[in-house]
Amino acid sequence: MQQRKPILYRDKDCICAASQSVWLAMECKNVDYLTVLVSKEEDEAVPRIVWPKDEDDDDNDDNNNNNEAETDPIKLIEQIQKRHPETLPQFYPKISLAVDASRCQILRLPGVMPRNSDPSWMSHAPFLFRSDGTKVARSSHCVSLEEVEEMQEEYYLGSYLCGRDVCAADMGERCCCYCYCFFIGVLFICECHCF
Image (cartoon, rainbow, N blue to C red; front, side, top):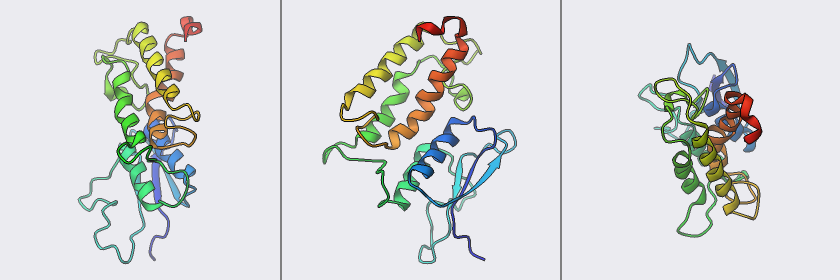
């Protein structure tokens, strides 16, 4: 029997920001899909999507044939947009013929976060620790939060990063900002009135 729905593999503990970004994108596009919950410790290849094989699609480039699952949340969001281009919201809205605001914001987000943080902690505690395990200085977080605020104010027509509709940058921001802001309060619990 042929698979008819895409299958989203995501972490069962719901703490992986990348999995949450892809899950949110599937829900925003109202995709009819199946979910498989896996332990991130046992299966590090999450999030990933297994798309149904189209009968007229011989190479099906969204499902890697080299046995390496795509786990980059931004690339998975691109796949979702590609397979559901008519369903709103558009994850990559163009603000002009030359500018793709969503992709610009995606590329910009990591640059505003603390520079001395260790990316290997990204899934569980984004941008909070250095590679030696020590906390990133509170002052670095204050600068990053100001930059994120400025990014959110640039497109004044709505509350999302690119205006009035949710886009791929907002999905990526889930990983970069929302978890980050939550964990800052936990990390600096005694000083959280400053954030």
